Amino acid sequence: MEDRGVERHDTRAAVERSISALPDDQREVLALRLFEDRSYAEIADITGRKVGTVGWLISVGMKALARDLSPLMEA
Image (cartoon, rainbow, N blue to C red; front, side, top):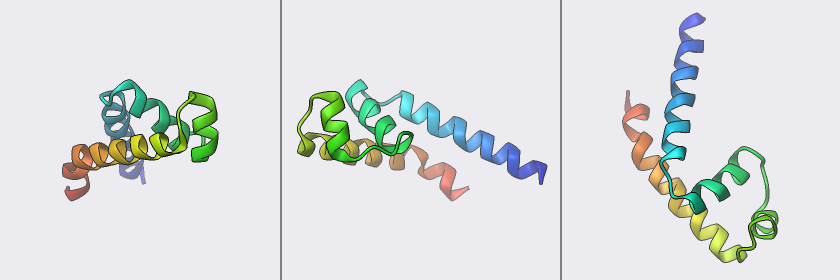
């Protein structure tokens, strides 16, 4: 059971590192979406961006995270 806790902590740390390496605009919208469960419309209101831009930033950010974290997922 303790191994799972350590693994979960390591995974969270890797995700946090990957998110912190993203450009500011991607990091901002991803944090609002993933951690605060905000809708695209809410994120657009909060950030002053268009909904389409929010969607694009989330998409690009998620692709970058997937690329960065894929070795972790394979392990």
